[in-house]
Image 1 (cartoon, rainbow, N blue to C red):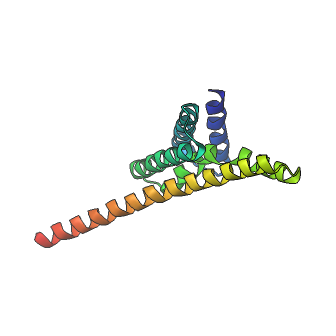
Image 2: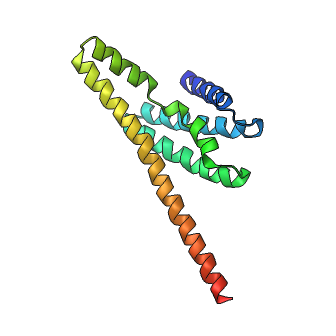
Image 3: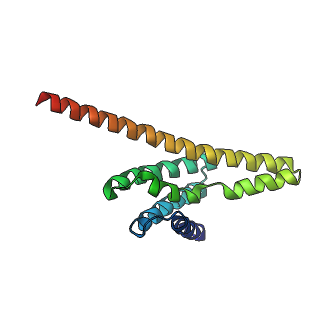
Length: 150
């Protein structure tokens, strides 16, 4: 649980550094909480790094898209700070440390984990982006067709 708390504090700190407005800070912190809770409980339940990161990223992308429409702001304002808890900083550090110390076994392990986290983040964002684009296109098509009928 301490991991979740520190992730939430990290999200708040990065939100302030990224100059998110005071009115939107709570939404970025909630996004960071969502991502860290999902990632934490999935890894504790035995899921691998890739699946945990993927599902957490999908959840915060959906959250960001919904909140962007509610509070009328770009989704990236909420999404970017909310992604901070998922970034593979520790994995990347250990990857490079084991590279420098010529520990091949640990280097490969942490390198693989770093790549899987990056892939989970990217794939989660792409999945939601495709889905949102599909919904927006269908909505525009429906509105255009309805306007032609009138």
